[in-house]
Length: 186
Image 1 (cartoon, rainbow, N blue to C red):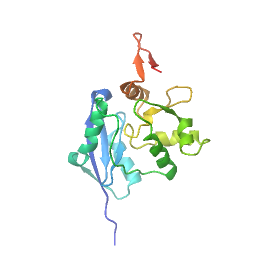
Image 2 (tube, rainbow, N blue to C red; image 1 turned 90 degrees about the vertical axis):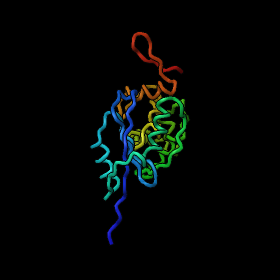
Image 3 (cartoon, one colour; image 1 turned 90 degrees about the horizontal axis):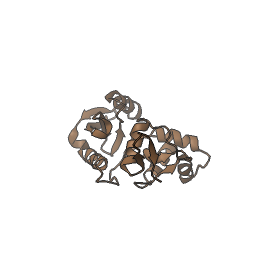
Image 4 (cartoon, rainbow, N blue to C red; image 1 turned 60 degrees about the vertical axis):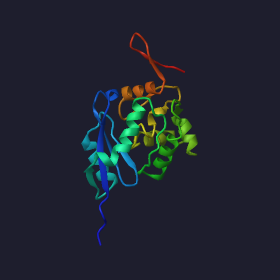
């Protein structure tokens, strides 16, 4: 007897913070499983689903993802600081432990990769934490943008450092000086 295909519902969110480029959101019946970033395309979503959810069927259904879109929209507009969404995380046990640790970073706070490595009881796994952070399939909602270098430097972000800066600014961390340079507010 064959397996039943998993339906993966998807929709989009367009917001000025991303220069009106769409974010694609995908969810299964278990919860949100993927958010693309503005420099990623629908092909990124399709490739991720093909790799992580074999035999999945993609179904465009804004109704199925509307709750996820609404909460993300509220966050981007500054009226939501905490997400109350179910997740369907697809990763290794270590990656999932890192992603779960990221969800514990409160709005308006940051952590270093070393801090996260300590949190997941792997203090020497700083680089592995960085790799797991970069593989986070649900950026923004699982706030990988709140992780910075130990010396307070912005480090890689799959969506680009400009997007990371915008998200941190939204949460009160960045201030733009008159000369166009940015600085942390702490």
